[in-house]
Length: 253
Image 1: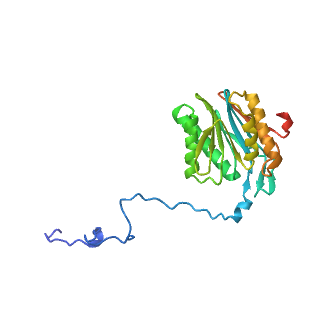
Image 2: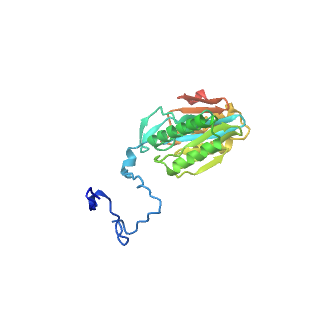
Image 3: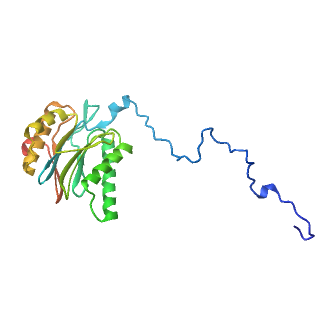
């Protein structure tokens, strides 16, 4: 209304006008406004031919439990497509927790990314809660990340010690988690398993377990072209993780 008492018509552009009740916005025919909205899943353009150019650990990795802790062992070789040795000094076992470690088997890039992610998550858990993650919780976390994460072709072993003792878990690329007294992954697993089936007992000392694990790696190195160039050994106890490499098997056998 103006000063003369007359009503001033309002312009439509000053206000938003709701659509008529029988008019719908221009949406997809199957659109459901109440359904959860998710983005597109990431897609990889990696072809089968590209896999021959991916650095792979080839690998034999071992984890076994003892009454005093856990021993893990790996070889040192990385290869391209299993045919060309691309590196002779790869550390395939890494600490990810004050009393736990992960081995690498499969794609080097995927394994390194996975290890860094799990280490960060374990540190974050400790910072938030003021305590270390249990091995059962850590194995579940690993499985969840492998199941839903972007990690490419990895099959690691998780080994660690908590208040319940020593634990070893094999992890598959689909997120499967299996606990065992000992386990082996990688291209040389058949040869290594043969050694462990004969020599492993549940009352081994740490030193005896080191010898058995090193023998398993040496057996795989003799026949598997994807494994070789030495052995890394990790001892895990409630005091921490100790990792050392040996180019000569005679140093540990």
